[in-house]
Length: 88
Image (tube, rainbow, N blue to C red; front, side, top):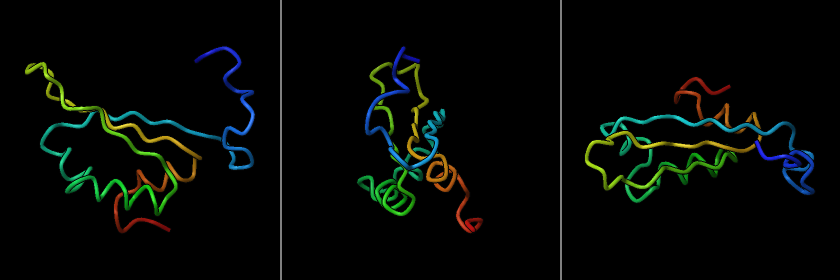
């Protein structure tokens, strides 16, 4: 991490601990995760409060995996990671 990054003012103040999870996503699943035009990600992000982003499609043919990053309050990230139907 960067030195001094923890003490940044206003960084999720009062939201509890923040969390970042980086997932390698096989190309066959990226569409399901992101949804048509990003609608699945937007819906999940809006419902849980987690920030979700996907790395751009690589121009390098040998790199097939896309990286999905979830960040935000720990509970939000946890909720975003939970398989549908298992949410409390």
